[in-house]
Length: 459
Image (cartoon, rainbow, N blue to C red; front, side, top):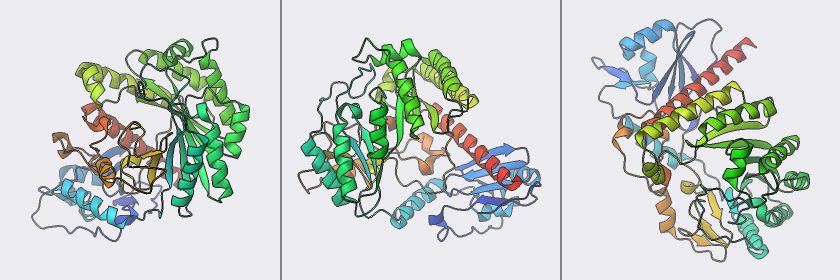
């Protein structure tokens, strides 16, 4: 990693090198006489006061150009030879997508993979104490994990971890609706000397100080994601908990405070759609007033129905989708103003998969003992069972299958990191709003990265 001078630079400087896995593979590109060059389609530009930042999504390299170099680059990228050498600029007829595909393929071959399975998403139950109108699990079987199955799950983890540290993600339904099996599994892992840490997706209602103490001590709970759909009236109506005599909103907010006091990170997800967009702006102000300055607290927004899903394709017109996107951007700006959202870090490694579904080191354990790859498939598409060593390789292959490319792929800056899995409903469509949001997000992260580097120099 290069540092850079406090004064504006006169020569292009790499602030972040290639992803480590590429360092010995991607040699400096030679400048071809008489060739016309352009920026690679995966390069994101971000002007700053001192010059120009460039980030290559494919290689993960970050460059800083002085104003003079930025001006030269705009006229002819080859006039800054380092842009060509470091693969920010390529010949006009270069096949960027083919290079990205080759880099992916080689990266997967060279990737250092865990010896065993290190990621486990465990559904303690498919039942829940809330009745959210938008729940994607509506209509599915409501079954709890038994102690017998929990014991088998613990044995499976012990057998397949191969001595590596494992991450447990508790899911449901509402995972705390059957918290006994969490303690059973964690107790067996601890007794077996397995190093583990856990996270949870929860509605937050069933936490109390006793549960939190056990979660910190035995479950090694580090992070909880809790969804809030609006201020008190909107939230209580949307969640429709089975406890009508209690304000679930107030109870959940109190439990968030208890979790934070215990050192557990809380990420609040704001599900936004047209019905609650304005109310979430009010909620953002309330959360800022109540939690701003909390070290382990952050908030992000999420479209109630993902813009790429089949359901959204039916329910959202182009105009409605644009309105929802604009509403989300206003909400995100409100969260940034309140300093309660986390922008993320600039990637420095190649992205090898989309999620747990196409990751060999991750598995889903269902309440009845079936083994799967995605929490959106709980009633089918299993590849195995805790009672059997057999694996259905065809199912595993299905979850890795990539969708056919669409026209938008040809010009998309995010192509190297985009895995449009055929099994994933969220990748059926790719709308302009999705690409715009990803570009805005990348530029903000790039700016934050740059400012951090500037501060390091100043210090």
